[in-house]
Image (cartoon, rainbow, N blue to C red):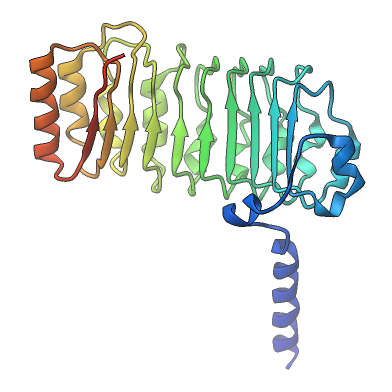
Length: 272
């Protein structure tokens, strides 16, 4: 009897922890607040907050305890506050066009976080404790200055999507070696790829279904070598190579080769 009661109590506790977590469709049905002041007028109703060029983030924002999504665009500050890790219901954190080179390790306390998107912010590294984000499914790091992924990224067992596009100083060979240890990773974005050749260990990312690799910035990417390596990814379903310069006849040949080896694979190769 005692075990039954304890089980019920635990069930209620878990249910209580999750009652403010919304699905994507549920979140869309909620009002999106664009002002902290307005949001604080009805803190219990705020699930989504989209801030445009905020001057700062004060601890008052923690009153928004049901917050599921926080978007910050062009902030007028250079670091995220350490209390960012206290949003227990946060599932999506987006920081765009910032000047934030390092994010605090406290961000790793966001146990419910599913999407972390930091774009064009000068970010140079990820916290070593990023593996504490056990529920992280998408990590998008477009246009930063990351040189190496931490070893702990290999323990993000729920990660399905990663964007490493426009990180021109990234050690891609080391990164692919680490990402190959993630069983659910199926999407890779390496647009504006800065090297002349793809690291050979990209074929170790055996579960990849979608790859976007367009507009390699050097224009010197070895296309033949790239196609040969990507063709070895047996689960490939979509490949976007738009913007990579190649002779028209060769393009047709390469596309047909991929489609022959991967029946049903969608190949996109638009010219820009």
